[in-house]
Length: 289
Image 1 (cartoon, helix red, strand yellow):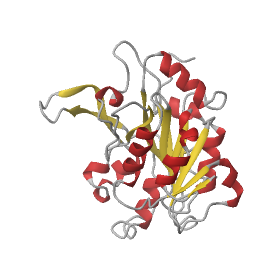
Image 2 (cartoon, rainbow, N blue to C red):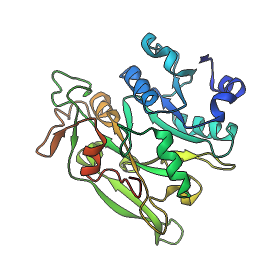
Image 3 (cartoon, rainbow, N blue to C red):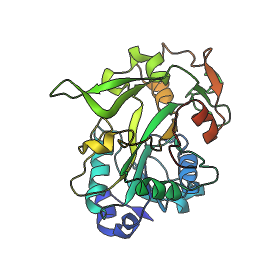
Image 4 (cartoon, helix red, strand yellow):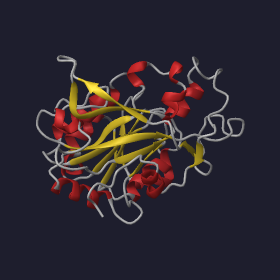
């Protein structure tokens, strides 16, 4: 189904939002739109909704795999404004996920289990949100792949990830069970990344509820949503394998002439498998076996 606007989706697509999990994909450019849609449809989402501007064509090969919403994504707050509008229109407790094109969700054992099965377990653990780490992907050779995107030859950093305490802006004390995570290209090329955009943590999986709102920094106004685990044990976390930062570094005028390659001594070929991400400590299976 194709909706002419976000307003039309909210008015005429209530059935799509009624039962989760629902994936919301925000398309910023034509790169890997089809593979992004297919990956999330195959992950077991009940519905995939892709938001894309008028000047980006809907790929014929995957038109039937998603619902398409014409929406101007290349503006500030485009993503949080749309997500918050969807939250307000959806029934409470519907699970949602959001990402951009050329980003791919991985979770523990995703090769054999669906995202619905994972979220059912997560819900039983009284969790309403899940921390995801955005793991940068990049092509090994920018002469052959000028936009830094290659599904077949994708690489990732196998080290260089770290976390810092997240201070409360009022008290200055660290927030309970909240950390700011860093690493990947945003760490290695931090001189080209604004400080407020260097974090790689994102609460990309969450359950709707009344009054819930997503901010521009990928955190929510309900503090428990922003925690990485419950108080009594470790919980599941997931990862989003993303070409978005590599694309930006190669296309933004302020960095494109300074970036000649991303591969370094700690690069590894991305295996497109959850076990690699768990072995690298980039997601946590928690108590789910």
